[in-house]
Amino acid sequence: MRALIVEDEERLAHNIGRMLEEHTSFAVDIATDGEAGLYMALGNPYDLIILDLMLPHLSGLALLEKLRAAGKATPVLVLTARDTTEDIIRGLDLGCDDYLTKPFEMAELCARAKALVRRAYNRPDPVLKVGDVEINTAVRTVTYRGKTERLPAMEYRLLEYLAMRAGEVVSKTDIIEHLYDFNSDRFSNVVEVYVSSLRRRFGAQTIQTLRGQGYILTGGRT
Image 1: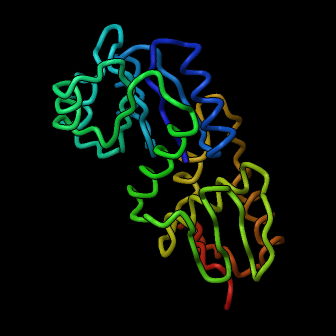
Image 2: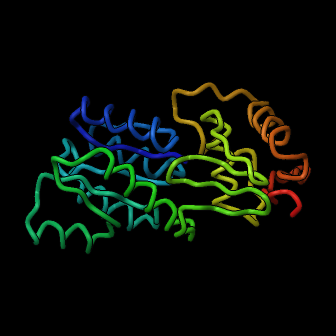
């Protein structure tokens, strides 16, 4: 999954980004003003946007309004020092999906972030089951035929994304756009490398390739 943090307090933005990378396996991009945040939000397929309201150049509420007007349905978690009922109602009316008032606990932010992404993919249960594969997104473990293990970050990120879209054929381009941030090295064969590794772990039939189209998670054969 890939998240955008729009927050002008750079230290806080990087702390949030580090927590998301370490505790949710999200790829993270950061914008420190509203105009840059809007540009990035409109131009990339993010799974989640974490949005501060008090931003330079363009306010968080204005960004949110423009984002929804452009037809972007990306889940938005608002961060704000404003905790009045009027501000909360305004944000919800403009299309935010959840909010946290500052100061907040990082663990709660991570939990809310994961819940919003699951909801967006119509996967409310934190445990994703596809065939013989069971992914516990709360603790980032994978169980296959009774054996539970933790995967390296990128393998887990790929498997979780395919599980969120179980039943769909997911293109290589789509995978790259959702698994990598701007600073990542995107080698042409990197998806094939991680798919091969997952097949070795969980069986050749776990992920199928449709030539010229992409990949589909089948979970193997029960």
